[in-house]
Structure formats: C-alpha cells, structure tokens
Image 1 (tube, one colour):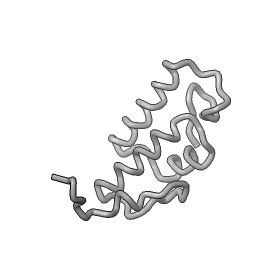
Image 2: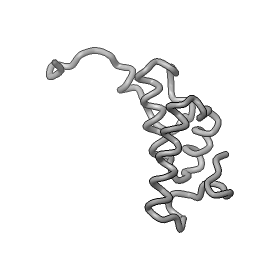
Image 3: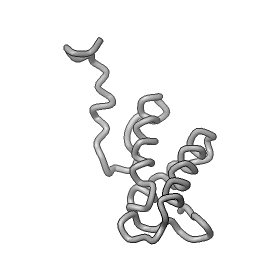
Image 4: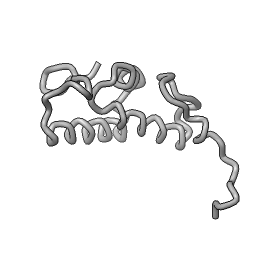
Length: 93
C-alpha cells in the first residue's frame, strides 16, 4: 500500500487532490523507483486498485522491462509483448 499525506492513495477517478498533489505523487513514485525504494508489491497494489499514479507505475514497469530488470509484467493488467519484440522493423534506423 502507498500513502500520501497520511492517507491511502485515492482512486484516480474519485479524488479531491489538487494538480500539485497529483504531480507530487508522480514525482515521488519516479524518485522512489530511481532510488530503488519502490517494490513490486506497491506497484501491483497501485495498478490493480487503480490508484492515483497507476499510469506512472505502468511506465515504470515498461522501463523495468526495457532495462531487463524484470522479464514480464508482474501485475497481469496490460500487455508488454511489444516491448519484448526486439526485431527491427522496416522503418527502424
């Protein structure tokens, strides 16, 4: 679980957070990921429960796949098969 201002992260569609608060959540998620403080359970909880920052967590999962940190999406909520296809396309340089 993830907290913001001593409360659980609210759902992304039903919240009263300001734009500044939402931006702060996104920045905190990225900073925690870059510093190694964001674990898989927290990411899964945010994505599975559609909390504020769930799209950011999906981007974090894509980044982890690209860097080879994980081999597949551990939340099971979206497909990442296109990221694992490393063949060059005709239009790639």
